[in-house]
Amino acid sequence: MSTDLEIRAAAGDPQACVQLARKLQRGRGLPRDYERAVALLDTAARAGLPDALYQLGKCYLKGIGCLRDPGGGVSCLERAAETGHAAAAYKLGTCFEQGLGAPRSPIMAAYWYHKANHLGDSRAYSALLRLARAR
Image 1 (spheres, rainbow, N blue to C red):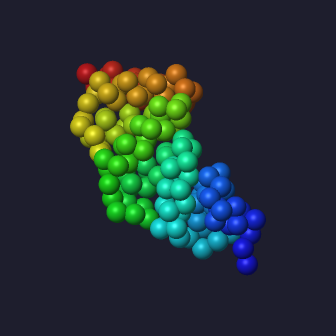
Image 2 (cartoon, one colour):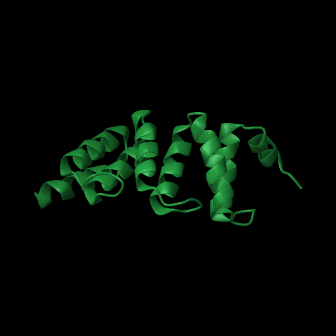
């Protein structure tokens, strides 16, 4: 039995794709299906939804529902962060801090943490302080 959400996602509604992908990832109301979730996030990301890019980037970084592709994950996160997605900017900071999918660079980490802080991510200020103390 198809729900309204599944029908809208099948029709390519980007918001519905993201909502259904989250349900599939969490196993809420539907059995967990990470591969299908990634396919739905990809559809929404191609439509330009920043949250879809962010979620898809995290999947690529960890290889959840897809082959692990840290570089592809960073690319998705950058596209989301450039639109003002605070959590994506924060995650990019951690990628550059740890050298995950991008060269390790405290300068780039600080850049993305600063941007995340400016966009309202509450974790970013602490990350900036941690970087400053490490120097």
